Image (cartoon, rainbow, N blue to C red):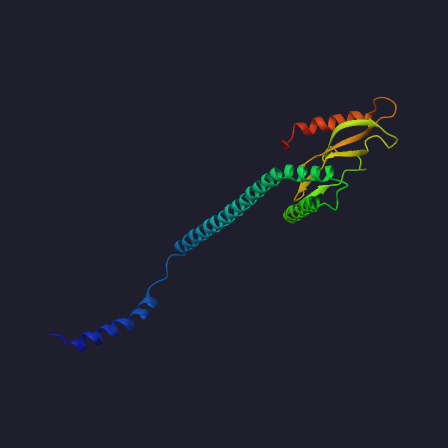
Length: 202
């Protein structure tokens, strides 16, 4: 009958003999090692592809979220533009009453609203005196002028860009031809028609 100490000695001898026995065993078949290595490489490629796919999915999701946020902001700013237009009309109607407290208060409200919108990325399209550009302007009328045909003579409704994209085209009166129809007026009509098929405006 073995004592507790004998069991302990036997266990120590087995542990000591373990690594030597492992060294004495013959190595695996080289073909088997090559197959295992090939499987490991294939698995590594799968994992790398999965990580790349996950990275792409996360990037696309982030881009989609940013696009949705910008569209929501554009919608909000577009809905505020008529308020800005109304304030401008009120200030235009009150011209000559600059010392009036109501006029001063309205001007302060307009300035504060504009500063907030400008800070968010809104900018006015400078159209007066510029050459008609269907990407930025919408011609609402033509009138004969001594200026070159296609020159913007008057801004009826200002246009705006929001973070580089046209949010609303400027409604403008354009210098027409001096002697009947010309290519310029045809180009303006085509520009308006082409833009009419684009995005809706408020």
